[in-house]
Amino acid sequence: MSTTTQAVVPRPGFLARRQRSYILFIVPALVVVGAVIVFPWLFTVWMSAFDWKIGSVPHFIGFDNYIKLATNQRFHEAIVHTLYFTALAVIVPLILGTIAALIFHREFPLRGLLRSIFTMPMMATPVAVALVWTMMFHPQQGVLNYLLSLVGLPPSLWVYSPTLVIPSLVLVEVWHWTPLVMLIVLGGLAALPIEPYESARLDGATEWQLFRYITFPLVAPFIVVAAVIRTIDAIKAFDTIYVISSGGPGTASETINLYLYLQAFAFYNVGNASAVVVVFFVLILALAMLLLYVRQRAKWT
Amino acid sequence: MSSVALPSHSTLARRGRHRRVLRKIGFWFSVVVIVSPAILVFLWMLSLSLKNELDNSAYPPVFIPSPPTLSNFVQVFKDNSMGLYFWNSVVVSGLGTLIALVVGIPAGYGIARAQAHKFTVLILIARMTPALSYLIPLFTVFQFLGLNNTLTALVITHLVITVPIVVYIMAGYFETLPKELEEAALIDGGSVWTTFRYVALPLARPGIVVGTILSFIFSWNNFVFGAVLAGRATRTLPAAVYNVLTFEQLAWGPLAAAAIVVTLPVLLLTIIIQKEIVVGLTAGGVKGA
Image 1: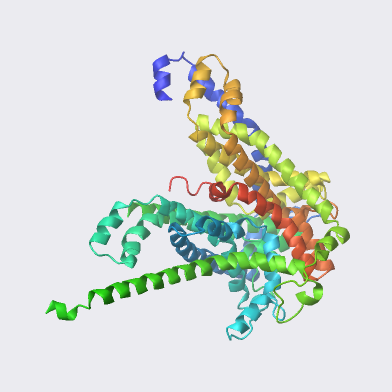
Image 2: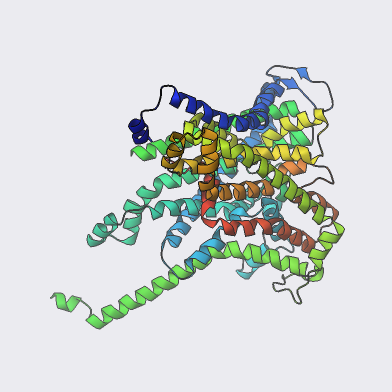
């Protein structure tokens, strides 16, 4: 662009006017985004200052909703469940996805077809996936307990057990989203240079050493990107948890999102739910910042 | 001395060959381990949908339907107005995507050419926000306007999903287009609008295809908007599959059939844009990595 504009020497004001017309292109989208995205954000903050139940007159109560949340045991547990679920649902897909990427990075027959099959879960409708897993988790007739019995293991209660429900839900999440991690890391592997490998092989490096000292540091930024995306998606997980366990048994798998849903659409307590949204959003932002900071560090070292 | 310690040439060669064969077996074993969960869950879903109720509740499970039956599919369409819910989904995701394209393609162009990156940041934060949190304020407003249980409310809410994804993909795509042609058109006296309409837009067709399909898929897959905002007759497919089928009939066959009806269109669309999906799903993360 710079060469053309220099060669022609535009009239004064020409570029500024063009800049303004480009802004006009954005206006319709800005209006829509303002109405359905920015307005809900602001309205949420506004509602969070009220004792607001659908169908009754809202009362202004200032920070009371937040103060109540600070001492709300159930909300605290929801935060713990969310962090536990998120940690597992980030780490396991990262490890498996990286391994899968290393496998699919090699040349082998039917690679394209097998890769397509491997990535299928990623786009499948979460509710449909959740329904099938619900049937698979069934303690009496479920296919998973049958598979366990084939290898001589005792049947499990899966999502009906308070201690196993979160790991079981993570299993679905891992199945669903490992392909995305694989694709991101695969993109990183495709961009790797060949030379370091050749010289390292000449020096007699083992496959493990090649991975540990060349491949891993070079794809680490991509793994961090996958970690950021996975964290944001895992913390927001709702559909599969809601359909499979609805936060149960009891409140054993009630994440912030589930708690939020119940407050807003089962008890219609939108003021309190809005305060939860604000806290939740701050938590997401903090996690995203933390990961971006880690990503910067990973780049420097 | 060294000749004593070293194994003979032929033993070495044999051992090398063995190791290669072992490594190959190990490699294919890992391929099977990593791919089979993906395919098995879908096959199980298919198997459940094609079996009669007796086989579906049998233990140990029956894997191959014999004989396969389509009665589960017939049942969900006949008894549960799946046709209506399917149409609702098509309308909501279709209109949501159409509006997103109308406002999002020019916006993407404007962002790319005016370097308006603040808007991109806004879009990224929008993506990070849980969908549920938009629902509470929108639900309250729709309640006030009497719009709850209407398709209009659903289409408006789905813009939360479709507009950011289209804007994001189009801005990225227009940035990759060479500016020289547009510069030439502008210098020849074309307005910014005609340059966009006749030079940039035709070139952006591949980006538009990806944006359209991804926006449609994400909107189609959304469950919670339909579950909260829709009435009995306006439910989208994912909401209907959960609300109607799970509570009114616990039979596995029809449930699995319904799950296939919901997810099959998405899987078919996915095949068209295989390679570009990752761009849409990572929306922002990968850029600048």
